Amino acid sequence: MSVLRPDELPTNVDRSRYLATVADLEQVGMLSAAATAWGAALEQWPGDPLALFGLGNTLLSLNQPEEAERIYRELVAARPDLVIARNNLAMALYRTGQLEEADKELRYILERDSVNFDALDGLGVVLIRTEKHQEALEYLKKAGWDKRGPDGIRVKDGKRLSVELLTGYAHHKDRITVE
Image 1 (cartoon, rainbow, N blue to C red):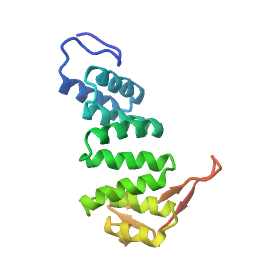
Image 2: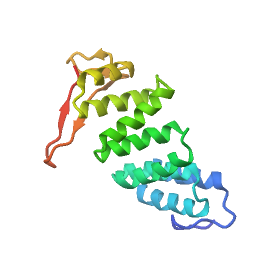
Image 3: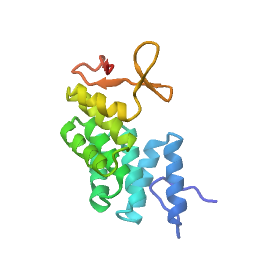
């Protein structure tokens, strides 16, 4: 048995096993190591969709949405049919404040799959941020946020709907409840 750094690949590496191992790093919270390992995978297998997707996810988890956006754009350019990559691109765009672009990606998904719950949720949140509350409510209801808890806040699968609004103050995060 040999121990390698995250940026090193074993000789005669099996792609599937390596990528599964890197995904495990991400799952256990070793995000920096996972990002490095995803990068090493992309050096070995340039443009690999799974490695691009994994790197994008890890970068989002590391709160690097600009870098994640770049990776997801590369993946979507190569695989425009990969809905989950478009959804995650929209998430990165949302987190960088590019709300119109996020809206466009989510609507693209919904034109092809009108019951994609991730896209319905995402578009609802984007529409709240752009102050299109009535339209947001329509999408959120389609996504399953049609029930209310005892306190009046919308719930789905035991989760409460809460949308973080970005403000100019690091210590203050407003939340909104969609009525």
